[in-house]
Amino acid sequence: MRMRPTVSWTPAEDLPPGSTALEPVVDALGAGGVLVLSGAGLSTESGIPDYRGEGGSLSRHTPMTYQDFTADARARRRYWARSHLGWRTFGRARPNAGHRAVAAFGRHGLLSGVITQNVDGLHQAAGSEDVVELHGSLARVVCLSCGVSSPRRELARRLEEANAGFEPVAAGINPDGDADLTDAQVGDFRVMPCAVCGGVLKPDVVFFGETVPPQRVEHCRRLVREATSLLVLGSSLTVMSGLRFVRQAAQAGKPVLIVNRDPTRGDRHALTRVALPLGTALTTVAERLDIHVDGGAPT
Image 1 (cartoon, rainbow, N blue to C red):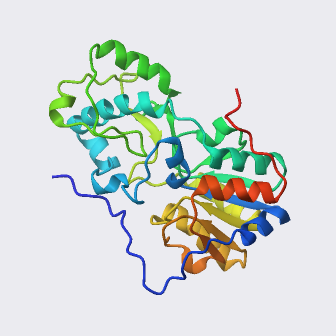
Image 2 (tube, rainbow, N blue to C red; image 1 turned 180 degrees about the vertical axis):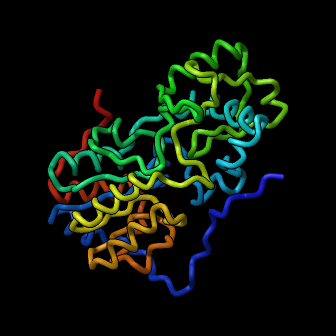
C-alpha cells in the first residue's frame, strides 16, 4: 500500500491574521530588487488546482513519489497514463493576470529574479525571463539511465501513437499534471522507453521524496542574498523546498511579504500576509505603481 507523503501542515493558533492592505507590497516593489517565490496558488486562476487550498488536490490525490516511480513498473504505468491524459489539459493552460503582473514587474526592472515551485511554465509564457524552476518542468522528460533530456511533446506524440483510442474521462487534474483515473481506466496503457537507450523515462520534475538538485538550491540561495526583499505568491510554504528561502531572507533582515488567501508556514517570518486573490491583488499593485499589465500572454 502506498503511503501518503508528508505534505500537510496545521496552522498554529498564534499566527498573525491576514491583511487586505496592499501598501507594503506596493512599497517593496517600488523600491525594486524584489525576489518572487511563487507556488501553485498563482496558477489556480489558469484552471490548474493547487494542493492545499479549498478543494486542493491533496484531499483526494496522493502524489507520485520518486521511490514508487523508480521501483514499480505498475506505478510508472499508472503515472504515465494519468500524466498523458492530464498533459492534454495542462498544456492548454494560459497565464492569468497574476503571471502577467509578475512579468510586467520584471519588465519595469522591479524584480531581482523569479523562483517558482510550479512545473507549468506559465511564468515564461507570460513573458518572465530567467525563471528558476525549483521543481523542474513538465515540458521536459529525462532518461534515468542515459540522462538525455527531450521535449515532452515528443513523448506525447509517441504515447498517442502507442495508445490509440485512449480517451478516459478524468475526475480531475492535479497541480503536477496528473489526472485522476481509476486502475480500470488505466488498463494496459503502454509506456514508452527512452528513444536513445531504452531506459526509463521520467518527467523532469522533482517528485515527492526526491531532493532538489543542490546546485539549483544554491542558485536560489544566492538570489535571496542579492535581493532587497522576498515576495511569496500563492504558496503555503508547507514543504522545506520553499520555506528555507523565507527563513533565509528573514534571518538576513530582509522583508518577507506573502500574498496567499490561507495561512502559510512562513507567516511568522513575514512583514505581512495579504489574504486576497492573487490576480486581483497583483493587478491592483501594478495599477498603483502605474504599470500596465497586458491583457493576454505574449505570442
